[in-house]
Length: 277
Length: 338
Image 1 (cartoon, one colour):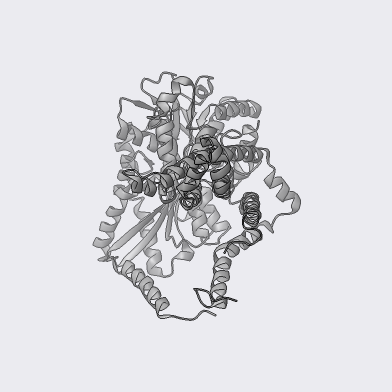
Image 2 (spheres, helix red, strand yellow):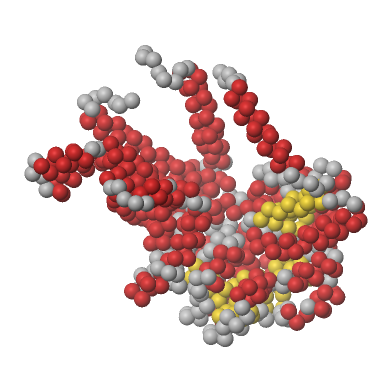
C-alpha cells in the first residue's frame, strides 16, 4: 500500500463510518421503525392513494422539466464561466451558489411574487394566457431555481480542465463548430452533465420550501409529494408519512446509484479499466 | 478509536462558551416559553409587555416571555418531541388534546382548568371581499356561484382552513334542515371554487392581497380586519355571514414541562392574565372577540351579530371531526376526489 497524504486509515475510516451512521443511517433506521407499524397491505394502500399517485405524476413531470431545463441552461452558464473572461465574472460565479444559500421559502415567495398574474413577469405573460405561478410550470420553475447549481458546479470544473486548444485543434483539422462540440467537447463533459442533471432531479423530487409557495396546491393538479408528506404529519400519521418518504427515498437512491454505476462504467471505458483515484 | 486532541478541546470549549454567553445575555430572573400559532405574533407583542410589567409590580421579579410561532399542529408535534414549552396558546382544541392523549403532558380535563373552556378569546370566520363587493357575497350560500373564486388555506394543513370548512358545513347543514347529500354537493362546489390552497392562514392572505388572486378570502375575523387595517379600508370589505362557527383559541400550561411550583405559578398567572380586563381590551383591539362584559360592550360596534355554532354541538367532538372529516380517506378527501 502506498503512502497516503492523510495518515491513519483505521481512524479516518472509523470517523467516516461513525458520521455516516449518525447523520444518514440512524435517521433512516427510525424511518424504517415508523414503517414497522404498518402491514404490507396498509403500506401499499398508503403509497397508492389516488391523490398521492397524482402528486407523483406532478412531481416527476415538474422535476424532469426542471432538470432538463437545468441541463441546458446550466451547461450554458458553466460554458460562459469556464471559457470567457469578462468584467463581473467573479460576481456571476458567486451568484451561481445563491440558490443553495437562500432559504428556499424566500425563493418560493420571490418567484411567486414575480410570476403571479400581477407580478412583474407574470403580468407580461398573462395576456398570452401563460400562467406560471400556481400551475405545474411554477413548480418546475421553483425546482429549477433551487437545483441549477448542481449542473453548473459539476460541469464547470470539467470544462475548465479541458484546454481551449483541444477545440482549436479540432477546428484546424477541419471540424465544424457543431462537429467539434459533438465529437470533442461533449464526450468529455457528458458524465458531468448527466451527474449534475441527476442530482438536480433528485433534489427536485424532495423540494418543499420553494415549491409550496408557488404551487397552488390544488388536489390532483398541483400537489407535490412533499406536501402530501407534510399533510400526513399534520394528521399525526407518522407511519403514513414514513411510507411516502420511503418511496421518495427509494426513487432518489436508485437514481443516484444508477448514476454512480454508469459513471464507473464510463471511467473504465475512458481510462482502460483503471478507476481514477 | 476516537482520540482526544487539543483541537477537539478547543472546539468544545468554544461551543460551550457560546452556549453560556447565550444564557448570560438573558438578564431576566425568570423565563417563560409560549408556543403559539402562526399569526399571533402581533397580538402577543402587544400582550406580553403588559404581563411582564404586572408581574414586576406584584412580585418584584423580571420575567422574559419567549415566543415560538408556527402552525398549531407543528407546535404540538414539536412539544411531543421535546420542545420545552411552558404554556401553549393554540387555535385548535385538537392540537392541545394531542398533548394529553399522545404525550401525557397535560391532564385529559385541561379544558376545565380555566374559564370558557380554557379559551380566553374567540373569533369566527369572515369573508374579505374586494372593494364594493362586486359578487354581492353575504352568506355561505353565495360562495358557490360558478364565477366566484375563493381563497382559503388548505384544511389539511391549517386550523384556519379547518374552521372555514366546518363553518361552511355547519351553516349549510342548518340551512337545508340537515340534508347531508345537499351539504356534500355544496361543499364539493365550494372546494372546487378555491383557486389556490395555501398551507397556512398568512400564506392565503398573501395570495389574496399581494398577488390579487381570488374574489373572496375566507379567514378569521381578526385576520380579515387586520388586513383592512394594514392595507386600507378603501380596497376591501369585511363581511361576517349570519350563521358562522365559534373558533376557540385554547390555552393551557404544560404540566410535565414545569419543574417547580414557582414555574407552575408563573405559567398559570400568565394565562390567567389573558382573562383580565386590560388583556381582553388588547385582544378586542386586535379584533378578537372576548367574554369580558365591559370590554365587549365597549367594542360592540366592531363585531357584527352572528349566530355562532359550536363545533361540539354540530359535530359531536373535535376527535370526531378529525376522524370523520379530516383524516386520510375522510369526508374532505371524498369531496375532493375526482
